[in-house]
Amino acid sequence: MVKRRRLTGSQALKAEKAVRQIPVRLVSTNIAEALQLAAEHDISAYDAYFLRCAQALSCPLLTLDRGMKRVATRLGIEVLEYSHEGIYLL
Image (spheres, rainbow, N blue to C red):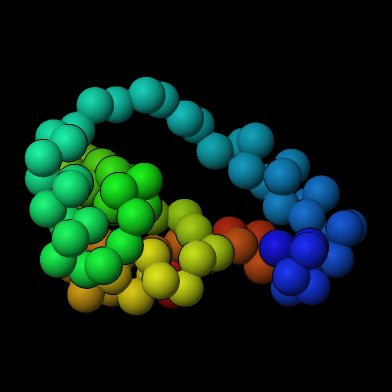
């Protein structure tokens, strides 16, 4: 995001600090379903994996990626977004 000049270095460091506060756990998901999602929405398998996990766990998705936000919205997944004020629900 800094390279694309969408965030300053200072904002990126604040975002990293905020992200460290998010509890993370590894989960498995149905890879075939993720691949199907990728094909249906013309997105990467990597992105589809995260979307499928959000669906399966009924969890919101935290992303700055516009494409993922668009697909998540289509799928009825809540989307969280980071701003310099903090993380909020779109």
